[in-house]
Amino acid sequence: MSQFDPTKTQGFFGHPSGLSTLFFTEMWERFSYYGMRAILVLFMTTPTAQEGMGLTTETSGAIYGLYTAGVYLLTLPGGWLADNIFGQRKAIWYGGILIMIGHLLLAIPGSTSIFFAGLAFVASGTGLLKPNISTIVGDLYPDKGARRDAGFSIFYMGINLGSLLGQTFVALLGEKVNWHLGFGLAAVGMLLGLIQYRLTQKNLGDLGIEPKAKMDREANGTKSNPKLALGFLALLIAFLAALQLTDQINIFTAVGFASAVGVIIVAVTLLYFTYILVAGGLNTEEKKKVVVIFMLFIGAAVFWSGFEQAGSSLNLFARDYTNRFLFGWELPAGWLQNVNPAFIIILAPVFGALWVKLAARNMNPSTPVKFGFGLILMAMGFLVMYYAAQVVTDGGKTGMMALVLTYFLHSTGELTLSPVGLSATTKLAPRKYLGQMMGIWFVGAALGNLIAGLYAGNFDPSNVQQIPSLFLTVVWVGVGAGIIFLALSPWMKNWMGDIK
Picture 1 (tube, one colour):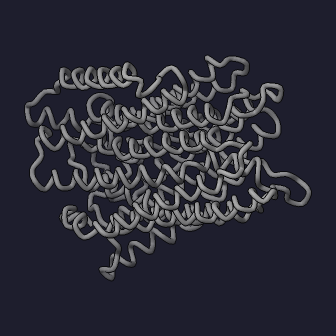
Picture 2 (cartoon, rainbow, N blue to C red; picture 1 turned 180 degrees about the horizontal axis):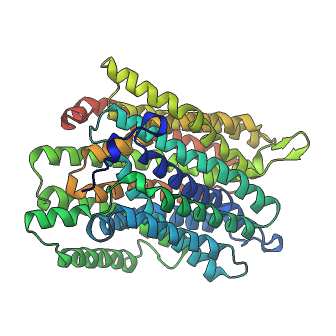
C-alpha cells in the first residue's frame, strides 16, 4: 500500500480529491450514453426516406429496451471481472474504450449489422465501467456514514451534467443535421472521459487496483469454482429452450427476444441471490443485509420501469403530441429530456446537504422510506402525463410544461432513490461480493429499462385513445410499490443492522 491515502485528502467540494476524477469520468461517459439515447428511438422510428431505420414503434421499443437493459445487465459480469481479474481501475479503462468504439460504429451509416454491433460494444463497455466506478466512489468513504450519501449525491451531479450536455448537443446535431454525426459526437465525449481519467487517476491512490475477490481468496486460501458458473449457464440455457419449445416466448422476434431477456434477468437474479444466501459463506447478519439488497433491487426495477420511459414513450410523446415551438423555432424532441438532468444538477447538492443535516439531528429517513417516496414521486409524474394525454385524445397538442413537471417529479424521486440506493448497496454488500452486488443493483435498472422499452412498444401513434390508460397503469404500480416500501421500512431498517 502506498503512503498516499485518497480517503483523507480534501478536494472536490471538501470531499476526497479522487471524487473529482470519478466525477468527470462518469460525466463524459454519461454524455455519450444519454446523448445517444436521446436520439436512438427517434432514429429507429424515422422513415428510411428521412435517413432513419423506419422500424415500427413496437420493434423500436423492444430494441431500445434490450439495449438499455443490456447496458445494465452486463454490469453483473463486469463486476465479477473486476472483482476476480482486472480490478476496478482497469475495468473502468477497458470499459471506456469499448464504449468509444461502439459509438464510432454507430456513426457509420447504411449498415444494420454495424448499428447493432455498435449497440453491443456500448452495452459491454458500460457493463465494465459503471458498477466499478461506483464501487471506487464507495471506497473513498470508509466511514459509511451520511457523508458517503452526500458524496454519491455529488457524484450523481456528474452523471446528470453529462446527461444534460449530451442530450443538448448530440440531440441537436442528430435531429437537426445528421443522425450519425450525433452518434459520432457521443464517441468524442467518451474519448475526453478516457483522457481525463488517465491524467488524474493518481488521485485514487491504490484504490481499485487489486481485484477484491481474488485478494480475499488468497488471504483465505480458497479457490474460485468455474464449474458452478458453467452449470449455472447451462441451467439458464435449458430454461430458455424450454420456454421456446412450449411457445411461451419467441426469441426470433425483437419483442420475443426482449421478453426472453426479461425472463433471464429474473431467473438469474433469483438464482444468484439463492446461491449467495445458501452457499455464499455469509453469517446471519450479512444474509439479512443481502435480503435488504434484494428488496432494493425490486424497488429500483419498478422505479426505472417508469422513469426510463423518458427515452421511449415520453420521447415519442414529445415528438408527436407536444407543442415544442419556442420563439418560432421547434426544439428537438430530445431536448425535453434535459429537464431531468438540469433539475438533478440544481437539486443534488440540496439533497446531499439535507441528508447530512437530518442525520446530525437523528432525523434522516431510512433508505426504505426514501425508496417509498421515490416510487410515489415517479408515479405522480405519470399522473401529470395522464392528464396531458387527455388533451391529446381531444385532438390537441399539450404544452411542454406537462413534460417539465413530470421530469421535475421524476428528478426528485430519483434523488431520493438512486444515489441513496447506490450508497446503501456499497454499505450493505459483503466485501467479497461488493463488485457483484453493485452489478446486481444495476441489473435492477436493466430489468426496469427492459420493461420500459416493452411497455413503450404499446405506444401506438395511430391510436391516441389508449395513451391515458397506459400512463395511468404506471401510476397505480408506482404508488402501490411505494406504499409497500413504507409499510416494510421498520423491518428492513432492522435487518440493515448498523448501516444508516
